[in-house]
Structures are given as structure tokens and as C-alpha cells.
Image 1 (cartoon, helix red, strand yellow):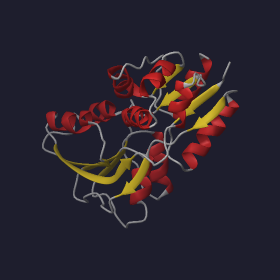
Image 2 (spheres, helix red, strand yellow; image 1 turned 90 degrees about the vertical axis):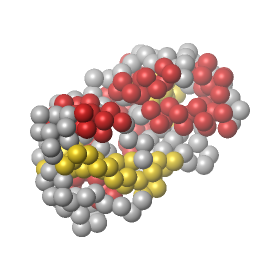
Image 3 (tube, helix red, strand yellow; image 1 turned 30 degrees about the vertical axis):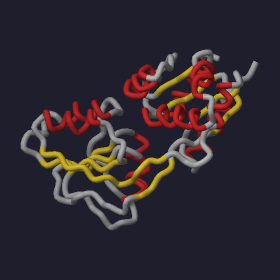
Image 4 (cartoon, rainbow, N blue to C red; image 1 turned 60 degrees about the vertical axis):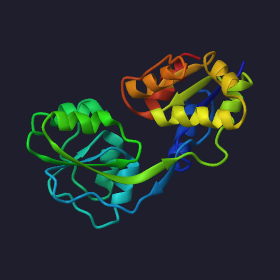
Length: 239
């Protein structure tokens, strides 16, 4: 029986770290990057009372631009906060729940009449921007980077279709969508779906779980924290 666990981290240190994590948990890592970063060259506004960064990638992109926040700096989670602090920024706010809805809960009391800058990818969740607008904030969004599917992605889909996949770690709704697109390009979408549903599937957060469910993928585990290590551990524990 296979012990291969697929993950879809970008082809950088995150994929390397994910492979180490899966190996240390006793499973065989299958790295199949589904997200490639295309920077837009834009920087966040500097006149907002609150500026929100939602990813480590975004933090790294603004690090060397000379940009400085005009008000408080908000990070979606510890990985983003760590990247910001490593670049010399002070992080003022961190939500209790590391998610878009968590940030809304963190800022909703301060939002009315306040200018809020959201700096993120082109696939950011409407939960964040709509929630802050509903709370009374004046929200502006800056797209720092686009997320595209790399050429050649889909080895995990072939493995799933062949029954050679024990687990899969989806970290965002977009990884679900791009997995299925890659499977279709490889001519094995239906078989890959069938293979996934005999494997242990993990998802970070409800949006990722819901995206999987919409496409007929049964999610077995959602970790309590939005960190890859927690996701991998939850998946491997059920193999």
C-alpha cells in the first residue's frame, strides 16, 4: 500500500519544507506545485489606518520596495507576521483565528469610517473585503501578485488516478481548482477524483473544504490551525 502524500506548495523553500515535514511524519512526499507567483509590481497605499497582508508571499514582495504603512499593520497569521518582522516591519494586529473571517472579527469594531488597505493576490477571498465593508470600513485592495498554474503540474493527479496516492494536502481553494484543471489536462479528471476519494484528503480552512466539496472531493480532515505542518500531521495520522 502506498504512503504517498501530495502537496501543492509553490516551488520554493515552502515545497522543500513541506517535503521534509511529510517525510518526518513517516510518509512519502509527492511535491506537485500548483501555484506560481507573478508579481504585479504594485505596492499598497500608505494612507490607510489599517493595512492587511494576507500571505508570506505578499510580505516578501513589499519588503524591498521602500513602502511603509501609514497606520497599523495587520497580518493574517504567524507565517505572514514572521515574514513582515523579518523584513523590519512591526506587526500591530494578529487575529485570533488565522483567516479572512478572523481578520474581520479583529477589526470590525474599529472599521466604521476607517480607511483599510488590503494587499494580497488576485485570488483573495471576498469574505475579507465584503466583511470589512459591511462593518463600515472604506476598503481599497491592491493586487500584489497573480497566482497561476505552472506548466507541467499534475503529477499528483496522475498518481491519484492510478491509485498511487494515500493522502493530499490542499492549502487553498485555488489549489483544488488547479489540481482539477491539471487532471483534466492530463486526461484523468474523473479517475483522479475517484482516487482522491479513496485517499485521506486534508484542507486548510472552511473555504478550501467547501471548494473541494463543490467539486465532489470528500475532505477527511481540517486542522485547527492554518499551518501546513498541522495539515500534514492531520492527514498522515489518518493513513
